[in-house]
Length: 218
Image 1 (cartoon, rainbow, N blue to C red):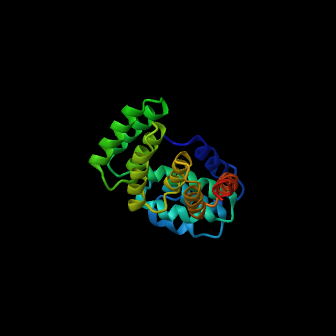
Image 2 (tube, rainbow, N blue to C red; image 1 turned 60 degrees about the vertical axis):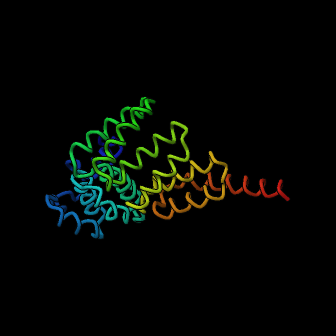
Image 3 (cartoon, helix red, strand yellow; image 1 turned 90 degrees about the vertical axis):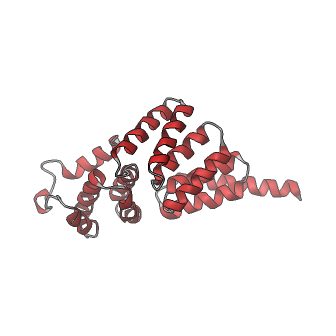
């Protein structure tokens, strides 16, 4: 599923009549997209992100993660959307189809069915980090924190830049009342994706809870 925000942001740059649009060559190859990602003109970087967002696979994630620190806000937003899109593509059409079915189950609150679907993805494509990440999310929503942690560990083995899983660790450890570990993982998530600014407020509150907890022990 194409995130609507990605399509809307991209349209703002590539719509007919956009200023100096004729200066931007149409990107039709991966090689051209990779060159565009390094271009000083923001419109070229956006075009490169758009191409990878439409065609890229999970292995292209690191290329897009670099742009999460781009000086341009819109580039950062598009890059984050594109990262999620490529992370969700394993290169195996059947695995991707089952992953999508699992997401539908999870969004509907059918966690057992979602877990079953994601487990099928993992069995078919064990190297695919997003299969593990989606199952970790389903375990979390089902209240199975330890199982969610175990799957997050598997995500990290395959994709150490997965800021979603890093943030997931933080949420899990909040439930386990290990606030120091929550802070650690939230900070790691921000280090990969500086756009997760809302986590700074969460970290501040967790730091207060840590101080309160230490005060009670003393």
